[in-house]
Length: 450
Image 1 (cartoon, helix red, strand yellow):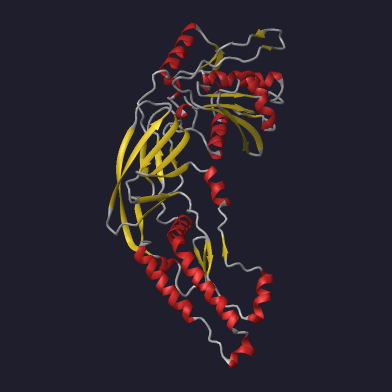
Image 2 (cartoon, one colour; image 1 turned 120 degrees about the vertical axis):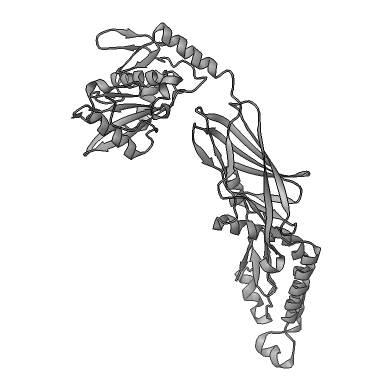
């Protein structure tokens, strides 16, 4: 009779590991398998004896054949310390900073395992999970000799294998099976990776930052600003500080603003649009990748080539902060200067640069179109991963369709998987007047300051 726990899935959560311990407590002593081993009364786990006992079990599970490992827990193995059938003795979990090197002196650093503290009925137990063996894995050997209290020596290089109910030295046929496992990894399989858009079929924002839209903004904004110029008169001269000199300075600022701002409007519009899409998680498209195979895929690279006319952003593009000019009466000029209110400030892009260093998505503008590159170090068997979102933008009219070319590759697999997907431009075109209204006071960092 097997343990009373579902072996169909790996035990990744604290609740699942607690269920494993309870299953061990309710088990028959003969129910230790190739996937689960239990030990009690080891004392401090960082001692030579305890860490060797744990290391031997870890090595045994790491040296299982692929056909044996995949029959339970998605190939994973589990060592329960501090519990056995009908006996909950408990096991203190040392600081991982001390436990990991204590065990690594025997297993080395290439075997993947993790210790977990599990509390059952108020008693702490340690569960060590061992990652599934993979095609191409080397034979895992003891990295350091060990001498037991009985004087018997276990030499470094010893190979342990997990059998039903015990971990023992490998036999000739075990070594041959492990050699076959290693050879399986030399012939890399064809790439198999399912790629899709987690947020639905991608769409592109339409923007209108062409010459006509820029001229419309300039004319409308110029009209509003010029209408705001106060009139110099004998009545308001002494009461409000509206002097000829103050009015002339204001007119000069308006002229400078209308001359300098238009060149920045395409960048400001795109920054406002992309930042809003990313912050609101709407119209930001998330690419997902699923590994349908029974082995991990390493060195994943997904490259998407965009046709000319379609842009992509994983971060808001850089844009300056533009402060709309305001009239400053002579009586307030000195106080305004002391307050340090500038006419124009550059946008601080340091946050964007830091975010780009930690991103798994990079976007490059090329002469033949934009290109998106998604990268991921490893994706375990059966797992799904989602990359950081991107926003598509186009200056083409609504309804325009763009065909994206997707190329999928991985360092652990051969060949390339290629797909095509269509992106449609939708929505009314976003123009500078929508982002930078003629009557607004300040624009900056892709937003309009009210």
